[in-house]
Every structure is written in structure tokens, then in C-alpha cells.
Length: 243
Image 1 (cartoon, helix red, strand yellow):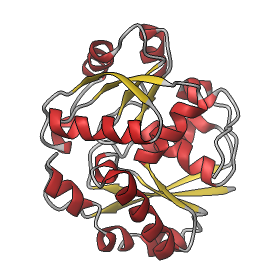
Image 2 (tube, rainbow, N blue to C red):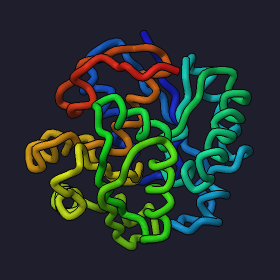
Image 3 (tube, rainbow, N blue to C red):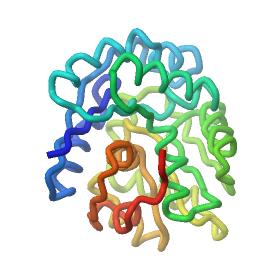
């Protein structure tokens, strides 16, 4: 049994995680601890505070007691908003507090894009344009070219959590461009685990979504290889990205 630990801010699309655990269909356990979200706002100051070291450290002990072998900060915007270097510092502090390998959804997107050979990506973000732009900058810092960027202007995770399949599919389609190797949907408040096959069929290319990528990143940290086609193209090949 491999136990994966996740720190998830508040309550929005956390039910994606037990669904993904079921779809993995192997000896993988997903343990999720909710962190204090503070102010629910897609705004730089609120997002920085959401991912503050003390907020993340508060959930670590529960994951340790559960036997987690790695921990991922399951919040894209709460990582990339610190910038490339700041996000590295955030993850290093989390690893020290947890006493285990650590990463974040933001880095998961960079690693996953490289895993599937997606050098150029289109981004469909629920965020306001300024926050979406920070994610594009983060991807570029990680060596991933952004061919198109679409923001949606949604201010709160609570609103994003109400989106259904039709809205998710519309976001992905609106963001896609012919020259993009993949489409990225970077919000862990967005329900996507049930929609991955439909998304990839509609677009005819890989789609990387936040909760999917978060679990894949934890598997990468524990050096586990799981073939689960129902979770999209990301899960139909062995990981090649190393620590």
C-alpha cells in the first residue's frame, strides 16, 4: 500500500480525490487534510496568505499519523502566486515540516506537461486575468510555452466548485488552440476527475487538470507507476520525470 498525502484548502472539489483513488484501481491510498483557506479570494495577497508556512504545517501531523509517504500542496494558485523561486521555498519548507518528500500542484503541472511531451500548452483558467497571467509566467519559468491563456474572472473557489461538466468543457474548448500540445485547467476547486475522458475526446489532445495532476505528482514523488486510462493521457504511460 502506498499512502499519498494532500493538503487541500477549504472545501470545493475535494470529492475528486476519493474518485481518483477509486479510478487508480491499485494499492494506492489517498489521504486528504483540509487547510484553513482564510479569505476565499483569487487575489494575490489572499492567495499568498492561504499558502503561508504555518497554515500548511498545521495539517502535516495528521498526514504523518496516517502514514503518508509524500505530501502535495493541492492548490495551484496558492503555489504559483509566490513565483518560481518562492514556490520552491514553499515546497522546501513543507518538506521540512512534514519530514517527507513534498511538492505542489503548480510544480505538478510543469512536470506533467513534460511527462506527456507537451512543450506548448493552452491554459483555461477560472481565475481573473491577472492571476491567470501569473500561472502562465510560472509555466514559462519551468520551460513550458503558453500558446494561449483564457481567464474567467471567477473570484472565489466556492463559485468554481459549483461548475458542472458543460462549463468545464466550454472552458477547455475556449482555451484550446491548434498549436497547443495539451490544454491545462489549473484550479483544484474545479471538479474534473469525472470529465477527463470527455474532455480529451472533445479536444482530441491531452488535458491536464489540477486534481488529476496533483495526485500524479504525489505518485511521482513515491516513484509509483499506475496505468489508469480513465484518468486521461497522463496516466497511460510510465512517469519519466525524476526528482
